[in-house]
Length: 168
Image 1 (cartoon, rainbow, N blue to C red):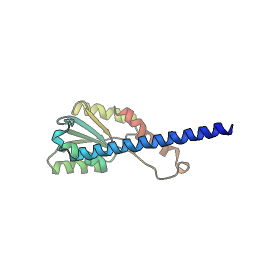
Image 2: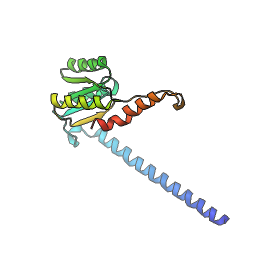
Image 3: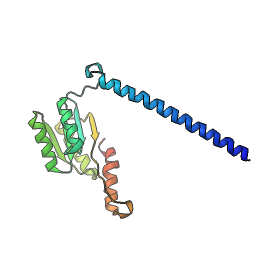
């Protein structure tokens, strides 16, 4: 019985070592690939052309969403932003306008399925079908789970998980 346990332990150690070797080899390969691609000029890479494509960015009023909107506008995409905050939407629209780009913004509560569907219908009528969807919006609660109210948990789940299904 003791010999069986010992053989099992040795086998597990070899499997662990094999997994570590595979992990480090793959990591090395991906790091080399990333380094190579960082040196390769973009004109030689096969990048997706997003010119004139309708790009919808949720949470586009600030942070990463605002920067994504700016970068897609620079790539000559037709940018649509959704945010829960009208002032943030206006700020992004002004930023893009200051660089000579246009953008449409809509106030949307991503926790509300009906509001998402209504706004998506309006977007289709105003701009056309969305070709690129970036679900950037999210909400966090910086408290332990047991300190959260049920309503906060439901809102977080609705925005961070369910809205991804409703926006498609």
